[in-house]
Length: 360
Image (cartoon, rainbow, N blue to C red; front, side, top):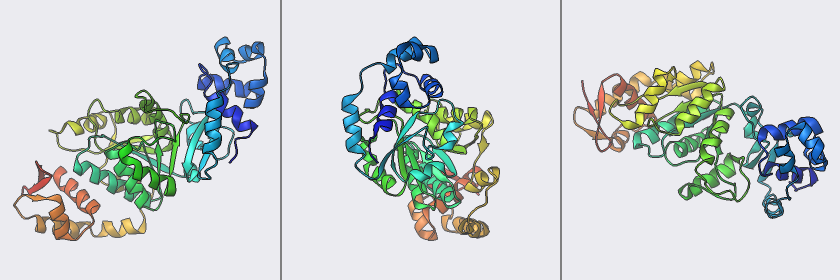
Protein backbone atom coordinates (compact mmCIF):
# COMPACT_ATOMS: atom_id res chain seq x y z
CA UNK A 1 0.00 0.00 0.00
CA UNK A 2 1.49 3.30 -1.06
CA UNK A 3 0.95 6.76 0.33
CA UNK A 4 -0.57 8.28 -2.81
CA UNK A 5 -2.13 11.71 -3.18
CA UNK A 6 -5.57 10.54 -2.07
CA UNK A 7 -4.29 8.83 1.07
CA UNK A 8 -2.03 11.79 1.80
CA UNK A 9 -5.12 14.00 1.83
CA UNK A 10 -6.98 11.61 4.16
CA UNK A 11 -4.11 11.53 6.66
CA UNK A 12 -3.58 15.30 6.46
CA UNK A 13 -7.21 16.07 7.27
CA UNK A 14 -7.38 13.40 9.98
CA UNK A 15 -4.82 15.31 12.06
CA UNK A 16 -5.79 18.86 11.09
CA UNK A 17 -5.82 20.73 14.45
CA UNK A 18 -9.36 21.51 15.52
CA UNK A 19 -11.09 19.58 12.72
CA UNK A 20 -13.73 17.39 14.35
CA UNK A 21 -14.90 14.14 12.81
CA UNK A 22 -18.30 15.69 12.23
CA UNK A 23 -16.79 18.66 10.38
CA UNK A 24 -14.58 16.27 8.37
CA UNK A 25 -17.67 14.36 7.25
CA UNK A 26 -19.51 17.59 6.40
CA UNK A 27 -16.65 18.64 4.16
CA UNK A 28 -16.53 15.24 2.47
CA UNK A 29 -20.24 15.51 1.67
CA UNK A 30 -19.78 19.03 0.33
CA UNK A 31 -16.64 18.48 -1.77
CA UNK A 32 -16.65 14.76 -2.55
CA UNK A 33 -13.16 13.70 -1.46
CA UNK A 34 -10.27 14.93 0.73
CA UNK A 35 -8.17 16.24 -2.14
CA UNK A 36 -11.02 18.53 -3.19
CA UNK A 37 -11.39 19.65 0.44
CA UNK A 38 -7.72 20.61 0.62
CA UNK A 39 -8.00 22.47 -2.67
CA UNK A 40 -11.03 24.54 -1.65
CA UNK A 41 -10.79 28.20 -0.64
CA UNK A 42 -11.52 29.44 2.85
CA UNK A 43 -14.92 30.95 2.08
CA UNK A 44 -16.25 27.72 0.55
CA UNK A 45 -14.87 25.65 3.43
CA UNK A 46 -16.48 27.92 6.01
CA UNK A 47 -19.79 27.84 4.15
CA UNK A 48 -19.75 24.04 4.05
CA UNK A 49 -18.88 23.67 7.75
CA UNK A 50 -17.50 26.49 9.92
CA UNK A 51 -14.73 29.09 10.19
CA UNK A 52 -12.94 26.79 12.63
CA UNK A 53 -13.03 23.92 10.18
CA UNK A 54 -11.75 26.19 7.40
CA UNK A 55 -8.78 27.29 9.54
CA UNK A 56 -8.03 23.65 10.37
CA UNK A 57 -8.01 22.56 6.73
CA UNK A 58 -5.71 25.43 5.75
CA UNK A 59 -3.18 24.68 8.50
CA UNK A 60 0.30 23.46 7.45
CA UNK A 61 0.59 19.87 6.25
CA UNK A 62 1.95 17.34 8.77
CA UNK A 63 5.17 16.66 6.86
CA UNK A 64 6.85 14.59 9.56
CA UNK A 65 3.80 12.38 10.07
CA UNK A 66 3.37 11.83 6.34
CA UNK A 67 6.98 10.65 6.09
CA UNK A 68 6.44 8.29 9.02
CA UNK A 69 3.23 6.92 7.49
CA UNK A 70 4.97 6.38 4.15
CA UNK A 71 7.67 4.30 5.84
CA UNK A 72 5.11 2.39 7.91
CA UNK A 73 3.09 1.44 4.84
CA UNK A 74 6.11 -0.28 3.33
CA UNK A 75 5.26 -3.23 5.56
CA UNK A 76 2.57 -5.16 3.61
CA UNK A 77 0.77 -6.04 6.84
CA UNK A 78 0.08 -2.34 7.48
CA UNK A 79 -2.87 -0.53 5.90
CA UNK A 80 -4.96 2.59 6.29
CA UNK A 81 -8.69 2.08 5.85
CA UNK A 82 -10.74 5.21 5.15
CA UNK A 83 -14.44 5.99 5.09
CA UNK A 84 -14.21 5.79 1.32
CA UNK A 85 -12.90 2.20 1.30
CA UNK A 86 -15.01 -0.94 0.96
CA UNK A 87 -12.79 -2.45 3.67
CA UNK A 88 -14.02 0.12 6.21
CA UNK A 89 -16.01 -1.70 8.93
CA UNK A 90 -19.66 -1.34 8.08
CA UNK A 91 -20.59 -1.80 11.74
CA UNK A 92 -18.89 1.51 12.58
CA UNK A 93 -20.94 3.40 10.03
CA UNK A 94 -23.94 2.90 12.31
CA UNK A 95 -21.98 3.89 15.44
CA UNK A 96 -21.70 7.44 16.78
CA UNK A 97 -18.75 9.45 15.50
CA UNK A 98 -17.11 6.92 13.17
CA UNK A 99 -13.42 7.77 12.70
CA UNK A 100 -12.54 9.05 9.20
CA UNK A 101 -9.77 6.50 8.95
CA UNK A 102 -8.29 3.55 10.79
CA UNK A 103 -4.69 2.44 10.90
CA UNK A 104 -4.76 -1.36 10.67
CA UNK A 105 -2.17 -4.07 11.08
CA UNK A 106 -2.91 -7.69 10.17
CA UNK A 107 -6.03 -9.29 8.71
CA UNK A 108 -8.11 -6.27 7.69
CA UNK A 109 -10.89 -8.56 6.39
CA UNK A 110 -11.78 -9.29 10.02
CA UNK A 111 -13.21 -5.76 10.30
CA UNK A 112 -16.27 -6.84 8.33
CA UNK A 113 -17.11 -10.22 9.84
CA UNK A 114 -19.48 -10.94 12.76
CA UNK A 115 -17.76 -9.90 15.98
CA UNK A 116 -18.36 -9.72 19.72
CA UNK A 117 -16.74 -7.48 22.36
CA UNK A 118 -15.34 -8.75 25.66
CA UNK A 119 -13.96 -6.27 28.19
CA UNK A 120 -13.16 -6.11 31.87
CA UNK A 121 -10.74 -5.17 34.60
CA UNK A 122 -7.03 -4.69 34.08
CA UNK A 123 -6.50 -5.99 37.63
CA UNK A 124 -8.46 -9.17 37.03
CA UNK A 125 -8.52 -12.21 39.27
CA UNK A 126 -7.07 -15.49 38.04
CA UNK A 127 -10.59 -16.84 37.81
CA UNK A 128 -11.74 -13.84 35.78
CA UNK A 129 -8.85 -14.30 33.36
CA UNK A 130 -9.76 -17.96 32.90
CA UNK A 131 -13.40 -17.07 32.30
CA UNK A 132 -12.55 -14.39 29.74
CA UNK A 133 -10.26 -16.72 27.83
CA UNK A 134 -12.80 -19.55 27.90
CA UNK A 135 -15.63 -17.29 26.70
CA UNK A 136 -13.39 -15.80 24.01
CA UNK A 137 -12.47 -19.25 22.73
CA UNK A 138 -16.06 -20.53 22.76
CA UNK A 139 -17.51 -17.49 20.98
CA UNK A 140 -14.66 -17.49 18.46
CA UNK A 141 -15.37 -21.15 17.68
CA UNK A 142 -19.02 -20.19 17.23
CA UNK A 143 -18.10 -17.73 14.46
CA UNK A 144 -17.63 -14.44 16.33
CA UNK A 145 -14.35 -12.54 16.10
CA UNK A 146 -13.46 -11.32 19.58
CA UNK A 147 -12.93 -7.56 19.97
CA UNK A 148 -11.17 -6.04 22.97
CA UNK A 149 -8.69 -3.33 23.92
CA UNK A 150 -5.31 -5.08 24.41
CA UNK A 151 -5.20 -4.03 28.06
CA UNK A 152 -3.81 -6.27 30.77
CA UNK A 153 -6.17 -8.65 32.53
CA UNK A 154 -9.52 -9.44 30.94
CA UNK A 155 -8.79 -7.83 27.56
CA UNK A 156 -5.62 -9.85 27.04
CA UNK A 157 -7.34 -13.08 28.10
CA UNK A 158 -10.24 -12.44 25.70
CA UNK A 159 -7.77 -11.91 22.84
CA UNK A 160 -5.96 -15.15 23.67
CA UNK A 161 -9.25 -17.02 23.65
CA UNK A 162 -10.28 -15.46 20.34
CA UNK A 163 -6.95 -16.30 18.72
CA UNK A 164 -7.22 -19.89 19.95
CA UNK A 165 -10.68 -20.22 18.39
CA UNK A 166 -11.76 -20.36 14.78
CA UNK A 167 -12.61 -16.67 14.25
CA UNK A 168 -9.56 -14.86 15.69
CA UNK A 169 -9.52 -11.49 17.44
CA UNK A 170 -9.30 -7.72 16.88
CA UNK A 171 -7.54 -5.31 19.24
CA UNK A 172 -8.59 -1.66 19.28
CA UNK A 173 -5.82 0.40 20.87
CA UNK A 174 -5.46 3.91 22.23
CA UNK A 175 -2.02 4.64 20.78
CA UNK A 176 -0.43 4.86 17.37
CA UNK A 177 0.22 1.46 15.82
CA UNK A 178 3.97 2.01 15.98
CA UNK A 179 3.68 1.69 19.76
CA UNK A 180 2.74 -1.40 21.80
CA UNK A 181 0.99 -0.53 25.04
CA UNK A 182 1.21 -1.99 27.56
CA UNK A 183 4.67 -3.35 26.77
CA UNK A 184 3.89 -6.56 28.69
CA UNK A 185 1.45 -7.46 25.92
CA UNK A 186 4.08 -7.23 23.18
CA UNK A 187 4.00 -10.96 22.38
CA UNK A 188 0.22 -10.89 22.29
CA UNK A 189 0.30 -7.86 19.98
CA UNK A 190 2.63 -9.72 17.62
CA UNK A 191 0.26 -12.72 17.62
CA UNK A 192 -2.67 -10.43 16.83
CA UNK A 193 -0.74 -8.74 14.02
CA UNK A 194 0.04 -12.13 12.50
CA UNK A 195 -3.23 -14.00 12.98
CA UNK A 196 -5.74 -11.30 13.92
CA UNK A 197 -5.88 -7.53 13.52
CA UNK A 198 -4.91 -4.43 15.48
CA UNK A 199 -6.58 -1.09 14.70
CA UNK A 200 -6.32 2.48 15.90
CA UNK A 201 -7.87 5.79 14.93
CA UNK A 202 -4.85 7.59 16.39
CA UNK A 203 -1.97 8.74 14.23
CA UNK A 204 1.41 7.06 14.29
CA UNK A 205 3.52 8.37 17.13
CA UNK A 206 0.53 8.89 19.45
CA UNK A 207 1.59 8.09 23.02
CA UNK A 208 -0.64 6.28 25.56
CA UNK A 209 -2.56 9.37 26.67
CA UNK A 210 -5.20 8.58 29.30
CA UNK A 211 -8.03 10.35 27.46
CA UNK A 212 -7.53 8.22 24.35
CA UNK A 213 -8.60 4.98 25.99
CA UNK A 214 -12.21 5.89 26.85
CA UNK A 215 -12.46 7.35 23.35
CA UNK A 216 -11.43 4.12 21.65
CA UNK A 217 -14.13 2.24 23.60
CA UNK A 218 -16.82 3.35 21.14
CA UNK A 219 -14.95 1.44 18.42
CA UNK A 220 -14.68 -1.67 20.61
CA UNK A 221 -18.42 -1.62 21.21
CA UNK A 222 -19.19 -0.52 17.66
CA UNK A 223 -17.43 -3.45 16.01
CA UNK A 224 -19.24 -6.07 18.12
CA UNK A 225 -22.82 -7.27 17.82
CA UNK A 226 -22.84 -7.44 21.62
CA UNK A 227 -20.61 -6.83 24.62
CA UNK A 228 -19.69 -8.97 27.63
CA UNK A 229 -18.20 -7.49 30.80
CA UNK A 230 -16.37 -10.19 32.76
CA UNK A 231 -15.05 -8.33 35.80
CA UNK A 232 -15.38 -4.63 36.54
CA UNK A 233 -15.33 -2.35 39.55
CA UNK A 234 -17.90 0.41 39.74
CA UNK A 235 -15.29 2.88 38.44
CA UNK A 236 -14.07 0.63 35.61
CA UNK A 237 -13.68 1.98 32.11
CA UNK A 238 -15.31 -1.24 30.94
CA UNK A 239 -18.63 0.20 32.05
CA UNK A 240 -18.11 2.99 29.51
CA UNK A 241 -17.84 0.37 26.77
CA UNK A 242 -20.99 -1.33 28.07
CA UNK A 243 -22.87 1.98 28.13
CA UNK A 244 -21.78 2.79 24.59
CA UNK A 245 -22.82 -0.66 23.40
CA UNK A 246 -26.24 -0.15 24.96
CA UNK A 247 -26.57 3.28 23.31
CA UNK A 248 -25.64 1.66 19.99
CA UNK A 249 -28.48 -0.83 20.40
CA UNK A 250 -26.18 -3.78 21.14
CA UNK A 251 -26.91 -6.56 23.61
CA UNK A 252 -24.95 -6.10 26.84
CA UNK A 253 -24.01 -9.11 28.98
CA UNK A 254 -22.35 -9.27 32.39
CA UNK A 255 -20.83 -12.16 34.28
CA UNK A 256 -21.94 -12.36 37.93
CA UNK A 257 -19.63 -13.21 40.80
CA UNK A 258 -19.18 -13.01 44.53
CA UNK A 259 -21.17 -10.29 46.27
CA UNK A 260 -18.06 -9.57 48.34
CA UNK A 261 -15.68 -8.88 45.45
CA UNK A 262 -15.20 -5.26 44.31
CA UNK A 263 -14.48 -6.59 40.81
CA UNK A 264 -18.03 -7.85 40.44
CA UNK A 265 -19.78 -4.70 41.67
CA UNK A 266 -19.75 -3.20 38.18
CA UNK A 267 -21.12 -6.39 36.61
CA UNK A 268 -23.90 -6.62 39.20
CA UNK A 269 -24.77 -2.96 38.60
CA UNK A 270 -25.08 -3.67 34.87
CA UNK A 271 -27.37 -6.63 35.54
CA UNK A 272 -29.55 -4.44 37.77
CA UNK A 273 -29.74 -1.95 34.92
CA UNK A 274 -30.91 -4.58 32.45
CA UNK A 275 -27.77 -6.28 31.16
CA UNK A 276 -28.22 -9.98 30.50
CA UNK A 277 -26.62 -12.38 32.96
CA UNK A 278 -24.10 -14.64 31.22
CA UNK A 279 -23.12 -17.86 32.96
CA UNK A 280 -21.95 -19.67 29.82
CA UNK A 281 -21.16 -18.84 26.23
CA UNK A 282 -24.37 -20.64 25.30
CA UNK A 283 -26.35 -17.89 27.10
CA UNK A 284 -24.83 -15.32 24.74
CA UNK A 285 -25.25 -17.41 21.59
CA UNK A 286 -28.88 -18.10 22.43
CA UNK A 287 -29.62 -14.41 22.97
CA UNK A 288 -27.91 -13.53 19.69
CA UNK A 289 -29.79 -16.35 17.95
CA UNK A 290 -26.56 -18.00 16.89
CA UNK A 291 -25.83 -21.71 16.88
CA UNK A 292 -22.97 -23.24 18.80
CA UNK A 293 -20.21 -25.03 16.92
CA UNK A 294 -20.31 -28.84 16.75
CA UNK A 295 -17.51 -28.93 19.34
CA UNK A 296 -19.60 -26.83 21.72
CA UNK A 297 -22.68 -28.98 21.17
CA UNK A 298 -20.63 -32.06 21.96
CA UNK A 299 -19.32 -30.35 25.07
CA UNK A 300 -22.82 -29.39 26.17
CA UNK A 301 -23.97 -33.00 25.95
CA UNK A 302 -21.36 -33.95 28.52
CA UNK A 303 -21.93 -31.07 30.97
CA UNK A 304 -23.85 -33.22 33.43
CA UNK A 305 -21.16 -35.89 33.44
CA UNK A 306 -18.41 -33.27 33.83
CA UNK A 307 -20.31 -31.63 36.72
CA UNK A 308 -20.53 -34.94 38.56
CA UNK A 309 -16.85 -35.52 37.81
CA UNK A 310 -15.93 -32.11 39.23
CA UNK A 311 -17.71 -32.74 42.53
CA UNK A 312 -16.23 -36.20 42.84
CA UNK A 313 -12.67 -34.89 42.38
CA UNK A 314 -13.25 -31.81 44.54
CA UNK A 315 -14.38 -33.80 47.55
CA UNK A 316 -15.02 -31.75 50.68
CA UNK A 317 -11.52 -30.38 51.33
CA UNK A 318 -10.27 -27.08 49.88
CA UNK A 319 -8.59 -27.54 46.50
CA UNK A 320 -6.84 -25.07 44.20
CA UNK A 321 -7.87 -24.64 40.55
CA UNK A 322 -4.77 -26.13 38.93
CA UNK A 323 -4.89 -29.25 41.08
CA UNK A 324 -8.56 -29.72 40.30
CA UNK A 325 -8.00 -29.31 36.54
CA UNK A 326 -5.18 -31.86 36.68
CA UNK A 327 -7.32 -34.33 38.62
CA UNK A 328 -10.18 -34.02 36.13
CA UNK A 329 -8.09 -34.07 32.98
CA UNK A 330 -10.20 -31.26 31.46
CA UNK A 331 -9.21 -28.01 29.77
CA UNK A 332 -8.89 -25.10 32.23
CA UNK A 333 -11.71 -23.22 30.47
CA UNK A 334 -14.13 -26.12 30.97
CA UNK A 335 -13.22 -26.43 34.66
CA UNK A 336 -13.60 -22.66 35.17
CA UNK A 337 -17.06 -22.72 33.59
CA UNK A 338 -18.18 -25.60 35.80
CA UNK A 339 -16.85 -23.90 38.93
CA UNK A 340 -18.69 -20.70 38.07
CA UNK A 341 -21.92 -22.63 37.57
CA UNK A 342 -21.60 -24.44 40.90
CA UNK A 343 -20.57 -21.28 42.74
CA UNK A 344 -23.66 -19.45 41.46
CA UNK A 345 -25.83 -22.36 42.58
CA UNK A 346 -24.21 -22.43 46.01
CA UNK A 347 -22.67 -25.86 45.58
CA UNK A 348 -19.06 -24.66 45.98
CA UNK A 349 -17.51 -21.52 47.36
CA UNK A 350 -14.35 -19.66 46.39
CA UNK A 351 -11.73 -19.34 49.11
CA UNK A 352 -8.68 -17.06 49.38
CA UNK A 353 -5.67 -18.16 47.37
CA UNK A 354 -7.62 -19.41 44.36
CA UNK A 355 -9.01 -22.43 46.21
CA UNK A 356 -12.50 -23.93 46.17
CA UNK A 357 -14.49 -25.97 48.65
CA UNK A 358 -17.63 -28.03 48.30
CA UNK A 359 -20.51 -26.64 50.35
CA UNK A 360 -22.92 -29.51 50.01
